[in-house]
Length: 176
Image (cartoon, rainbow, N blue to C red; front, side, top):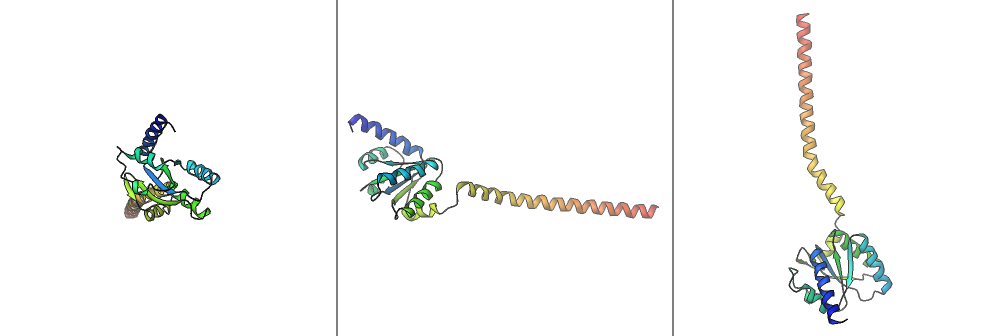
């Protein structure tokens, strides 16, 4: 790569890394081009991308950003997953892919909203339910108390209507 190409690449990578709410670093040794292509495709389906770059260029891309120092993990073959739409889906896609390919790639670390995550934390994120399910559960949890209140108020109104009806019947019998 020429110097100007490297500068352009670093600038582009810096932009993509700062736009992504989550970045996962992996060691992709032992994977062939066909496997990496399959991994890229599965990540693209969940709104993420897999980038392989020289560690030195990644270090340059991180400089001057709010991303914490990840240089200790930038040794050996390093691939980066940049998740743009979801935090859980890329981790889940990576974990599923690793299960199918002899535990490769291996998580080195993650960066979630400028905080470093250890591989164990990334594994826990991968086990979370999908975003849509979490949102549905949250909506259900928020809706339950309101539904209970509406049910209680409806029951009280029906009870009141029953009492008024009984009072009217009593009055009709007394007057009739």
